[in-house]
Image (tube, rainbow, N blue to C red; front, top):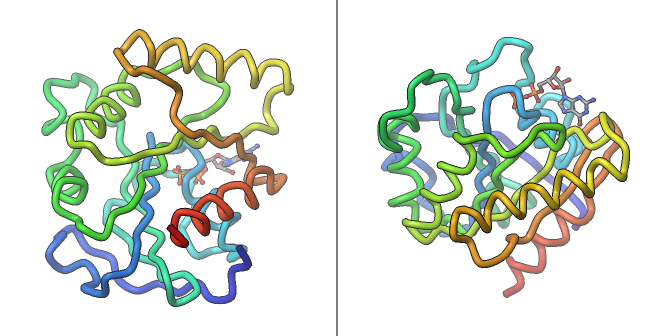
Length: 198
Ligand code: GDP
C-alpha cells in the first residue's frame, strides 16, 4: 500500500467523541517505549505524525490519523506503568478498555512488543484480555535491528511458546519490524490493505 495522505484528525480520552465515519480502524498499542511512535512514523512515512519521546507515558490519549481517506490508524496510550497489576480494568485505563469494547469500527489491534525481551506479563495479560473480548489482533515485534536474525527467530519461537502456555492455540499473525531500518513496512501495510479489501 502506498501512503498518499496521513492526517491527524482528533485526540481524546472519550470513545464517544472518536470520529463517526464508518472507516475501518487499526489500533496500535504496547508498553511505553516499545517504539510505537517510531513505528507509526515509519509506516506512514511521516517523521513526526506520532510524537516520539524519550519521556515514557507522554501520549495519554486516543489519537486518530486518517490514512489515504479510507482507514484510520489509531495511536493508543502506552501501558505498563502500574507497578502492581490488580485487574485488567485497573492496569489498563478505563478509556482504553472502553475503546476496545465499544469501538465498532475497530478491525484489528496491533500489539507491539520489543523483540529483544522475553514475553512480559503485562503484554500477555493484554493479549488475553483481547481474547476474552474477541478483538482480532496481530503482534508486531519492534526494534529488530537491535539483535541478530537468529536471535529474532529464537525470541519469536519463545513468544509462541508463552502464548501456547496461556491457552492460545496458535501464534497469531505477526510482523518483525525495525523503524530505524524500515523493516516490515510493506508487510504491515499490505496486510492492512488486504484486510481492508476483504
Ligand atoms: P513509544 O513510547 O512506544 O512511542 O516509543 P518511541 O517510538 O518513542 O521509541 C522509544 C525509543 O526506542 C526511542 O529512543 C526510539 O529512538 C527507540 N526506537 C524505536 N524504534 C526503534 C527501532 O526500530 N530501532 C531502534 N534501534 N530504536 C528504536
